[in-house]
Amino acid sequence: MTRVSEHLNQALHDLMESDPSVHLLGEDVSDPYGGAFKVTQGLSDRFGSRVRSTPLSEGAIAGVGAGLALAGDKAIVEIMFSDFVALAFDQITNFAAKSTSMYGRPVPLPLVVRCPTGGNRGYGPTHSQNPQKHFIGVPGLSLFEMTPFHDAGELFARMFGLARPCLFFEDKVLYTRQMYRTDDLFRFELVDDVARVYLDGAGRPDCTLITHGGLVHRALDAMRALLLEDDLVCELLVPAQLYPVPRLPGLEDARHVCVVDDGTEGGSWAAEVATALYPRLWGRLRRPITLVNSADGVIPAAPPSGTRGARAGRQHQGRGQGGPVVTDFRVPKLNNNDTAYVLVEWLAEDGQAVRDGDPIVLLETSKATEEVEAPADGVLRRLLAEGAECEPGQVIARLLGSADEAPGETADGPAQEAAGKAADEHPGGPQTPAPSGDASGVVVTAPARELIEAHGIAMERVYALGRKVIRRTDVEELLGGQASSPAAVADDAPATNDEGGATRAGTTTHSGSRCRGRSSGRPRSSSGPGARSPRPSRR
Image (cartoon, rainbow, N blue to C red; front, side, top):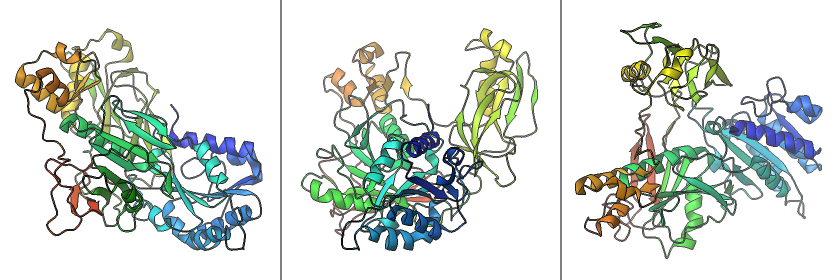
């Protein structure tokens, strides 16, 4: 599968090959560096002077790009970190955006300003922000954001086709994610250029989430948890165009709408979406639209003390009582700048036999992603989940026995026993429980499982329903309505806010910071019995 950064790079290659009027400008975009996140690799070698590395002046970069576009060419400008787009604010809003209409006639200005954005990478307060809201409502300016569901080449063509300046936000957490891939429980489709992620065959969702590209995977995590733990079905809508807000499909029968925005509240994109939806949905809504934003505070460079995985002890290699040789796999020091890296992707499966020198994990530093090789032969036992932070010297996996021994091992063999002990000794490993299911691949939610056990229903009857996910309502169907309905979201009787205003709620995330959630507009509380707001994790 192609990673988002690779997909963007290929889209730029294809665009510049097909259209010789396209120029690309930015700091360190030329080879051999190829941009801070390697999205522009290979472009300067291939297209020469049409790709130019510039001095460190965002105002000058944006101004030159707008000038090229005004003169009849097309320009793509890269701001290394979107935080620095503030330094180009005047050129974008007062020159580029206004030039399309202030000369007495429409003037095309095909300019795309690429903005790597967002946190969760430990880059600190001034390299981790989401500045989208500062450009919403500027006449002549459109905002887009990369998602894992939209083709980047089509988005570039669409932005240039508008013949007006566009800001194109690319959340840095997406660069190492794979294109066109969702959680294993969900499917996606494009409806009117908006990605719709849904649970197949679930019918009307309990809640419809709306978010932008960078929060897709955190929203999917929330959707999975709500389904498996609380039997609540969510649907997710992800537009690539942020502003003007496009028409979002399938909301006419929405029970509850929640807009999730990684920017802080106050003039936010989430509020803009709610403003666009209220006239359309006012007569149908059963509760106010819920807005979830990032905490109102400076983004920290690191999680609070004590939240990172523990450092491993001394290097261990040896043979237990009749067990296989065990080799610790420690994170190497990759540079002199970072104190922690992000485990982007395991390149070998858990339990897979690997050889000394095989690449087994992809780690992301502040400037690049690097493959790390196995230090010995053995059977891989992972101790850390993808997306987690790790420090130099930390044990993130163990290699059990040797690759030659792997084929003869069984599920209850010594390697599995040693692997289990290794996992027990390292609580910093994966913590997400697997959904209840069996070899047939059917997933049973926790409330459904409780009802099955309470009434002694044979699982064969449950599997005979032929559904991928078994919810409590499915079990009630088997019981002929004998069981009471779950206390889920009370759609028909929302509680009223005594003060007549919108309610607010803080949700604590894994980092200890607060993620702000609030209801917008209609003077009724969204905190009805059993209601839960999805909780996208913060930086």
